[in-house]
Image 1: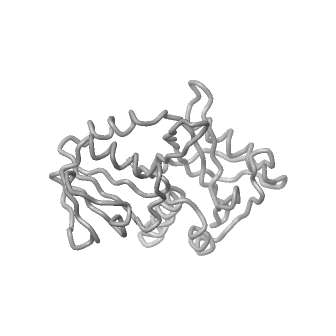
Image 2: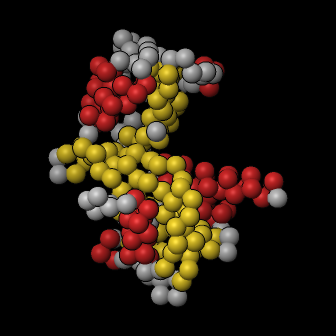
Image 3: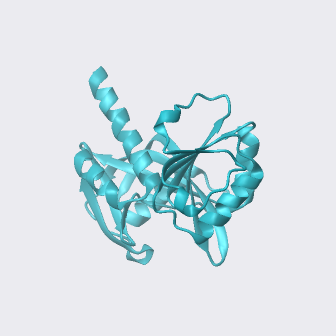
Length: 228
C-alpha cells in the first residue's frame, strides 16, 4: 500500500520485516516524546499503536513537516493498522494513466504541478474503463489500456473533510493525439510529451505519488531493455 499523507510517504511494515536502522535519521518508539521539529529526514517508528497514528495525523493536520522525507511504521498487525488508518478518512476512488508513445510519456501541468491524467471513478465504474475515460477527457486523445501499475493513496482536505484517495494506475498506449489539448475546466494548462529524462527532471515539481508511479514504470522499462 503506497500511502502519501500531505505528500509524505507513509510506509507500513510488519515488526518482523527486515529494516536497516542505519538508513534512518531518527528512530522512535510510540511512547517517545517528540515535536514536529524532530521529524526530519527518514524516520522509523517501532511497534506502532493506533494512538500513535491518531497523534501523528493530528500533528500533520496543523504542521506541514516539510523536512520529513518519509515515515516508516512497524506494526504487530499490519493489516489492522492499515484499516485503522483508513478509518480516519473518507475514501475516494480514482483512476488514471501513464500514456506512452514512441518512447515518450505524457504529462499534464495542473495547479502548479506536473501530474498524470486521472480522475474520480463514477459509482460502480470499472477502474480500467474509468481510467480510459478520464485520460481521454483530460487530454483529448484516444488510448488503449495496458498493464496495471502500482496503486497509490494520497490525502487531502476538501470542504472540511479528510479525504484519502485511492488511484488505480495503468500504462496506456496512445492511438491518436492529433487533437490533443488540455481540459481547461479541470484546470489543466498544458499536455506535453516528454522523454524519460525530461519526465524525471520535472518530477521535482510533481507529487511524491506521481514520482513513485513514473519511476516504477521507467525502471521496469529499463530492466526490460537490459533483458532484451
